[in-house]
Image (cartoon, rainbow, N blue to C red; front, side, top):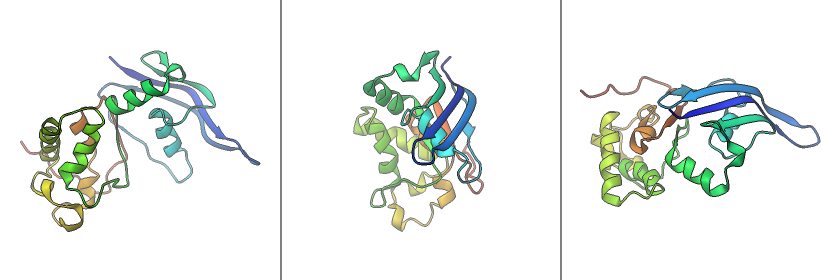
Length: 180
């Protein structure tokens, strides 16, 4: 089973006054876990997500992916890991406003090399799974049925992309009920 492990991971940004954004973080995430990261502004949430997503590197400690130091991954391996292994759901929409819901979900699948037909099927299934099948073809700017909280529904991106590591900030309201 795949595992992410942070061992005393810190991240300090240099400057006239160094900024300690992350201090000795200890964390274990196993395949299939859903993790919410919350805290006050400046607590290091974004820095932690950037380290976990291989977008930033720790200045101290060790980040292990299946007991392999993340520092040993080259840029190509890190990019493949981000495209195929990690799933993040962010508080901000990160949607392309002139595209439909299904097209926005399909975009992430394109980076995995999925065909358009395959990506469309997976995206539609994921939208249906979180109760957004009706507005799937609406444009975000003209679709009142799709509430902001539904778009932030934890797991939508991970469901579509079948990521091993869906990570989410909790939605601000209750997500739509799952369909049976």
